[in-house]
Length: 159
Image (tube, rainbow, N blue to C red; front, side, top):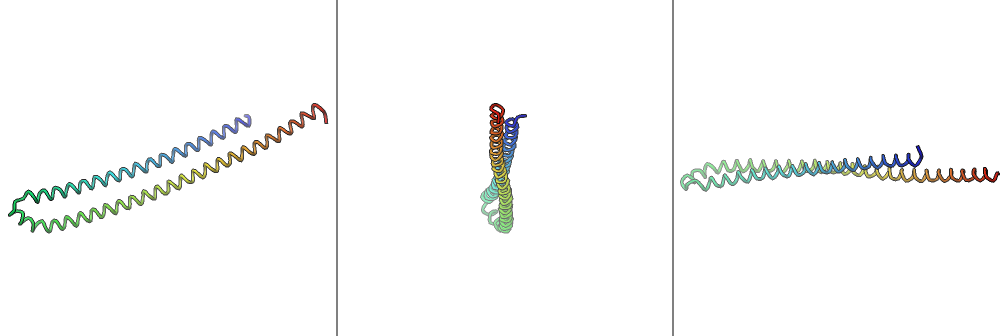
């Protein structure tokens, strides 16, 4: 196998490795974005459910008669406080969960960015190695060519 073919083969392998690493990074990025979209959708659904629950509660209060309303107001005052406390606790828990999920995602994103930077560093190192290999091969070929010329000159003209 000639030196050029060997060099081309190694170069092709390195380029394939770089392409595979870039693909992995892109897949990680897509996965992270999909997970973030899913979390946002879940929060939106939870918010809609809470909003619907509050609307139903208000609608029920308006539909009752005045007499019944006064009596129910006394009963509902305590229930409202409890429900409000529960909802506030629930919303607080949702916010906490959201913050934790965001922190985890940010941590994942940071680690993936770090992986990307490592891959970029590897790519740069591979490119530098490839460049230095080319320089070395070029120097070696130049020496061999000079030696060949000297040998050819000596063979033809004698020394």
